[in-house]
Image 1: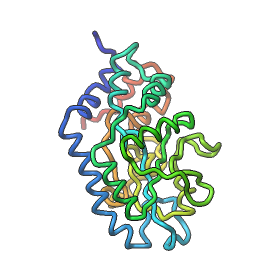
Image 2: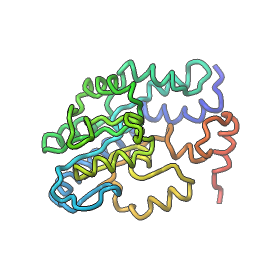
Image 3: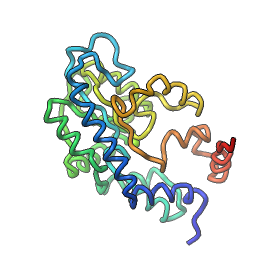
Image 4: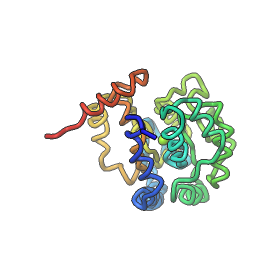
Length: 261
Ligand SMILES: [Mg+2]
């Protein structure tokens, strides 16, 4: 079967994620870094990982915020289906069908670390851009993979799985949800695969780089990042976040972004 340009874009990423020891090593390395940072983060009451955390937070109970997709759950089999079935294009319908099956496996090292953190009194929040209709299936999938889940959180947060759009102000920019959690908890680690899991990311390539630069020393300590070269805001910024563009135009913009120095 001939593969379209868009499929070819993601083929290497999905194959690497699924087959390589290199991916597994990167994931284990990320969660090992989190494990090393945890005692320091718990002890130092001035420590926060969230730029949204302001005011006095020394006495707040500790929390870790993790993203779901490609941070704690591996959706690469879903990605493989998008590549190989139908027209090779991602769609919301295909994505919803995949998450409804609750088949995603844990990213190596994620569940073990988060269970150990929870046992030390840390509340684990899942801040995801999956939608409200996906909450029950997402919870069931996380439960099946033995992730720590709570049904209640402090203040007006609700529970510990925060979907995009669950409240009108909970946009896909995760900063508002981080700020809400920061009112009641000291956020000791942020864990994600996308810049949006750490700071606002819907910016140009240059803006993203300059906004992240002051936090260079936070990676691997306060900010734990998982590898995802298959998709993310890093990709969308190359074509102005405009998913209505044709696959050909999208690829042309990506080619234009390449540097040969
Ligand atoms: Mg993600």
